Image 1 (cartoon, helix red, strand yellow):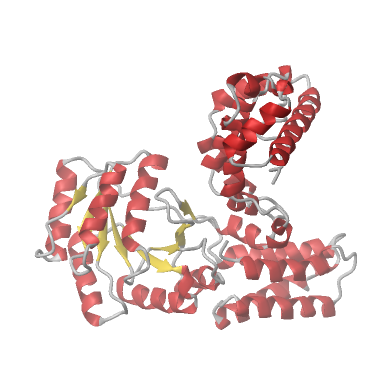
Image 2 (image 1 turned 60 degrees about the horizontal axis):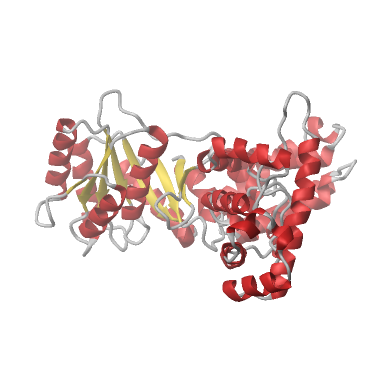
Length: 451
């Protein structure tokens, strides 16, 4: 996650004050000094840091906090609320025009990931909002930009409007909107040209496209990895174009995260989406409250639930729960479960959303796809009978499975033992369900990867 360093520093600082029954003014000032350093190190704009610290200090030293039963917890609540406010307060949704199509102009510097983000946004609009977007290739300067958008469009089975690289972007935008009206598309996403740095020619051309396209939304694509520079870029574009929203890309990278915290405060433009990876479906609506919770180690349970709802087949989950109750859970079911969890995204990303799961807590887990691949290889090397009834596994069967999966007999033994332990635990958990049928025990239970 982008905020690992910041999260670790802030969580360490807040832990000191969390359990305090009494909090003095000195405690708060000391904590604020640490928070200030952590934010500056994360590349948060120094003016933003100054305002943030002043605001938190004022509220944390207020009567309500100092005289509460849990002042330590209340101070953390104030920090969480102020961090949320700093990043925009509430989620800001993408515009919808009163009359179709809604025109979205994608702008930004070259290299920020604008073309890919345009395709990701189209995918998001179709999957989550049931819209029919049309992509427009209006970047006529960067070699292969048009080809890249056409390839992404093909991948998504989505129309891409292009007039090649010899027609002006203004004309492309004009004809694209006419075509979208004819074909009844409800969103037009215009991928405009970027430059390696901001220049007058770029801005003039974008202003002309804006004038002809009359966009309902101008989304600025900003590379979060560029830190403080990202904020300066956002400021310049906003001054010239009146940007309506920001998309932060590469927020999954090993960056200090300062751009995400500063960009809203400096430009007063909401962050609408965040790119959390390179895959076409790794664009998420930006929720300031959830992001603040993740930074402070409080988890992001809502996003985790949303991921589960889109990735887990409900009918299969009900079937699985029935099997768990009757202890009919086999290695085939286990593989199916493993697939569903993998569909939700990288495991370390999911663990990041769990309360209290900071980087330190995750160091011992060392969960990666290679480990899961190992488990899958072992299960796939079993016969149908062995998957259904692991109790028949004698020494020669275990040797054969280890050889077939490229693992050791110890690996196979460990997996079999953990599988049996998990089944016992599932029996206990399903036995604990109430008469009203509050189901527990869905998912992989307490299974730990054995390697």
